[in-house]
Length: 164
Image 1 (cartoon, rainbow, N blue to C red):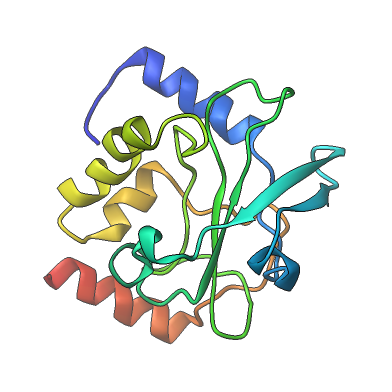
Image 2: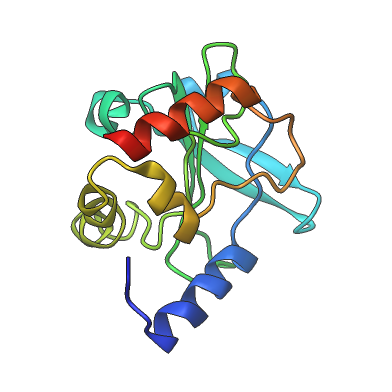
């Protein structure tokens, strides 16, 4: 998290340019199959899969999320990254706070082990303070979805993270 590597900084810029924007609502069909969704900003479709199963440990890593999506690698990807988006019980994108998803530097499609080392371990090293992690890897809101959670709840979550 404190690495000042030029390579890492360049890679992170590529990741943020390459990845699709999170849909504002969870596509219900994703619960049972891969979905293809158009991204107007990128001018093409991206494939997504559900990332809400027990192996994802939402209760630990995105405790206020009910559903999550992860973009899939394609032949057009210029990185090994994946977009990770999480949603509340009303299927609305969590744009901030402890339940929000964040870009993964390494897609689980490429290597679950490397994903754990480069994406999950840094979160663990932040000792539950998701705000530190989100400073380096901000949750995506490229479609300008409504702020979620609301300001008061978000500020309470932020205070809780700082006092943990």
